[in-house]
Amino acid sequence: MTQANGKILGVLGGMGPAAAAEFLRLLAVKAPAQTDQEHPRVIMYGDTQLPDRSAGMLGIGPSPEPQLKADMERLIDWGADVVCAPCNSAHYFINHFRKELAVPLVHIIEETVRAAQTLSPAGAWLLGTQGTMQSGMYQQEAQRIGYPLREVPPAVAAQSEASLRAIKAGDMTAAAAAMTALAETLWALEDVPLLLACTELPLAYDAAGLPPERGVSSLAALADACLRVLYE
Image (cartoon, rainbow, N blue to C red; front, side, top):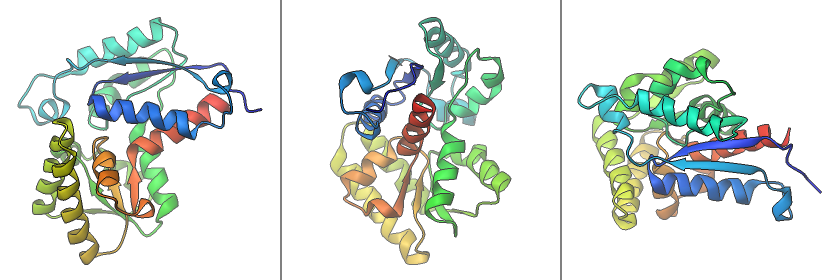
């Protein structure tokens, strides 16, 4: 019997809804549990009304920071002992108030870079939203631990945006087609895994039927890290 340690995980979702749902599924299937009672307790707040994170980062839309902080504090008020957000770009704003939170945050960017380093010490292609890419969050974390990330050509970055926007619109066929095209382009340049630094992109990657061992899912990396905290 593997029993969770009793900590309650607070999940801030809605960015986007499909990614948050997939994160909860991964928590369930990856947990070392045999019965309902052996799974950890989870509170999820899906705030779909948060302003667009990428637009806020680029200065072309309102900042979601005040609402993100209020939502995190709401989860803590509801009883969360540890919190997370299955959205990469949200961490640009979360980083500003992370130290003010009353409980620990499992940080998706830190955990995904570590997962990439474990899978492919030689490096990985970095794919994400325009805001995440321009923010330098992944590049800075990779540099901090000495991990070599490859930045994609502009045309491939546009395909990445098309893929994640298709997921948000519920068009899995278009998302898979865009992901397949960009993967083939990048692997022809250098055969290293794709680091999927937007939580919609792992859904597109899976829909495309691409090899699991050639992709690093930020959703899976976050789920694994949360489970380590919940079962330690």
